[in-house]
Amino acid sequence: MTDYDLDGLLSDILDARLDSALGRLSVAAARDGYPRIIHDYLEPVLQRTGRMWMEGTISLAQSYIAGKVAERVLEEALEAGRPGLGGQPRGIAVLGNIEDDFHALGRRMVASFLRLDGWEILDLGNDVAPGRFVEAALDHDARIIGVSAMMLSTALNIRGIRDELDRRNLSGILPMAVGGAVFNLRPGLVEEVGGDGTAASAMDAPALFRSLVESPDARPAGGTEGGPV
Image: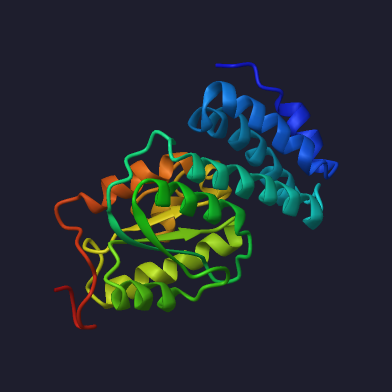
């Protein structure tokens, strides 16, 4: 692994030196490629800022800078068109932050990696009620739902989506991926909220989504409320 200056990049983000942070990542990407620098350089620093946000030790403005850095680098990776991912059409994935959760950075990163892998993304945004995830999946013949939560208190709201899937006889047919920092910190939370799986990082999300939709029972969820078609 290349010896990236994680502390330097973190300092640039915390001190709002956006150009310096992007410069560091651009130089590293030119040398090592976007997949490697995203996985080994950008993501570890974003994980640090995520933990700091949960601990209340960074401001909203500092979190915003972290988000802008991530968005710019992922945009450059998309433009470069050489992320090392598949890219074949895979269908629609519904994404959103669960009700009462407003931490969009992780979801946006996941969306970018999924687009690179060939997914069409229906992004519902922040603070999404459980029923809306299922309605959107049904309305758009989505193959999978992806739900993000930063804190334990909001992650527990995901259980409402599983309850709605059960009510509509869609559990086992329409998979639900869950993610966010709290899932890496709390083993067993995936099962507690009724998720079908999680990924350790945004870069690992495409493999998770593929594995869930390629299960023998998974198929598009379009159809009537009474059950799958």
